[in-house]
Length: 161
Image: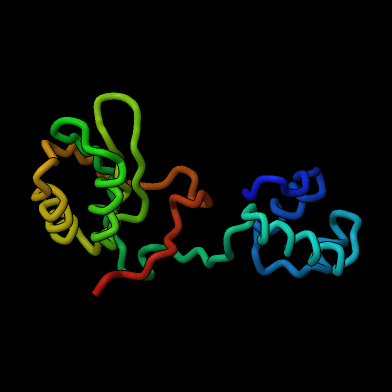
């Protein structure tokens, strides 16, 4: 968020909660739920976008509909101290990596990978492993989502060609 922005109040929280539940909800519907006019909701949403609270609107798609039938989390262990900046460069080169973060514990990073099938996942894993600073990886395949409505259960990236 930009410094010096207006405060984030309870109405803003209710508006963002409504948009997170369904980004297609109209300003009139949100206004009726939170006690504001559609115009007032729009002004608040515009401000929330300008200040970086709301960063965009997306569609959540069933991953298998896009061809993503295999999913895994990959722990990445690096030689020495690989800077997060370098790890970020590597993961950007792999469209199958849908999320990546540095973590505490033994691993240096955790990757969320989606692939067409196990063979495709193995190929992605080999591409990751050829990086000179990657010492080892440990993979955990996802069998099912216990919270199917969670963002992790959906996909926002198309299948790479």
